[in-house]
Image (cartoon, rainbow, N blue to C red):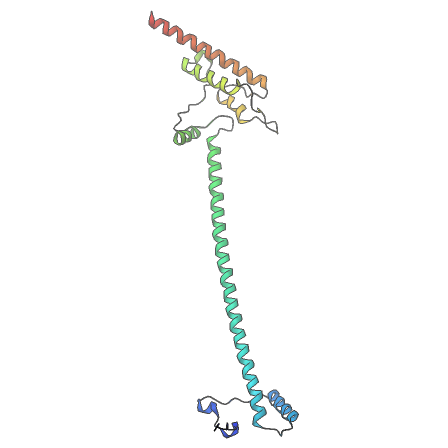
Length: 226
């Protein structure tokens, strides 16, 4: 036979059995319990309505606690994500700044390698030697009467290669300033050409220097054979 449940007022207070302090309804909660009793036609105060209001209070408190916990977890997750994003942004920014600094250093290094008046600086010739193994020498700026045969050959070769080609690249830029091709003439002791005609005159001078070099070479070879 099923056992008939005992009425709550015939049981011992469970909070006392658990060693917990009893809780009391607030004035507003008592008003709710009284209204509930009135709707049911019961006299008040009574344990049934007080227990119902207290149960709702406990359920509401528990739900509110779960929401606070969930909100706290969400906040922590959001903060963690924001922190991770911040760290990533800082790393990206740091790499970007580092890359920008390297680019600036390279640009500055290349700028030091080029003489603004034309040709390469001593540092530029050294850099080419280290990178490509090239043994570049400064341009020949002496008068023709003071040049050695090898210097005639070097300057003549440069003049024909730079300004004797069939189609010349631009000698001035959009602002009317000489290009690096035109400025190279300064490194060889020649006036910077701004027109094709001026460039061709340097090329013609280079051809004369090469012809003179070959005459000297042939003369010296003939003298050795005699």
